[in-house]
Every structure is written in structure tokens, then in C-alpha cells.
Length: 230
Image (tube, rainbow, N blue to C red; front, side):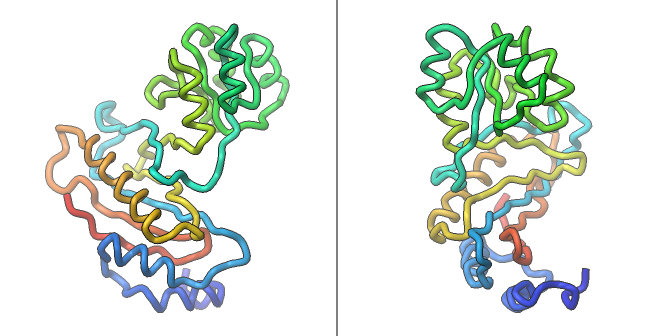
């Protein structure tokens, strides 16, 4: 979309970005800080294009990551767990716990949560929720750390903002990096942490450049392209 159809603040922000240029991560964070602010605290979004083929299992990257400074938003977590661990999960921040009764509640339409954690023994109840949780990206899975023996620790981490990520059909990964109210130093730490983590997941079959493109943007700002060392 041409800039003339964008908001005044977006057009003002675009003046700080040189078309086609890739900035160092430090420069990119500084440019982001110069963009006009909105009345709300915008989320800083990270988009990474990887040189992978998601159709191949070993290149379809998926996992979970906790950022050094969080993302500025707590998550509502439910835990499929029973017994003593259920009480501990509630104390750790879960908004609801249980087994068959929790599954029934969700089947009946209750969806006031952002993340679902499950003990392996509870998957007999969770399994029937695939059609409900799957399309919303909420189905617990071992690869993302949401099916685990240590439910209490998982609840603590995800309630504090731990993020799940996976490559889409185009080999892209999108995730929030924090808020625009964060200091440049905090955003820089979070960005470096994510990029280092992704570099560590490089599939052995990938040849040449692995991280092809990186872009930072606020909810209402232009994107800033980042140069990344391979």
C-alpha cells in the first residue's frame, strides 16, 4: 500500500527508514524508538524469514522461549493436572486446573485463557479437544513444552510470558518482542536472545544463508529491516 494511504504518524515514521537498507540491530532499535508514539503502548513485533522448507519435518521449527525481559503481557494459563500438582499449579498462576471437568468446560465454550498446559496423564481428556483448541493454536504439545511432567514450572513460565513459536508455510516466524515503552537496552537483549536461539536451531540440511530477513515494527509503525550475522 502506498504511503499516501497510510496514517500521518506512519508517514512521519517512514522518513526515518531508508528503503532497501538493512540496519544493525542497535540501529534498528534506535530507529524504532524515533517513530511517533500512539495513545496506547504498542507491541514490538519481530518477523524472521528463514531459509527452511517447512514441509520437511526436520526443518519445520517449533518450540518455546522465555525472553530476558518478558513481552510486557502476562498470559492466562489453564493446566490439565490433578491432585497435589493442581493446587501448586493454581498457586503458580493457573486460572483453572482439572481433568475431565476442565475439558468439558472448554467443550461447552469456555475459552478465557491464552495457553493450555497438560500433564501427559491428562492427554486422554485433552485429546478430544483437538477440534476446539487446534484451530486456535492452543493444543498442548511436547515440542512446545506444553505437555510436560513438570506442569507447575511450565505454568510459571507461560504465565510470565513464555512464547511458543513455529515456522509458517513460508518459513517465517513471528513473535512479540516487548512493548514500545521498553528501554532500547531491554528490546536489544530480547532481540539478541531470540536470534541466538534461532541460530542454535539451524537444521543441518540448510545450505547458505539461514536467516534471510529480519524485520522489526510496532503495531502501527513501518518495519525496519535488520542485518544479521549468520
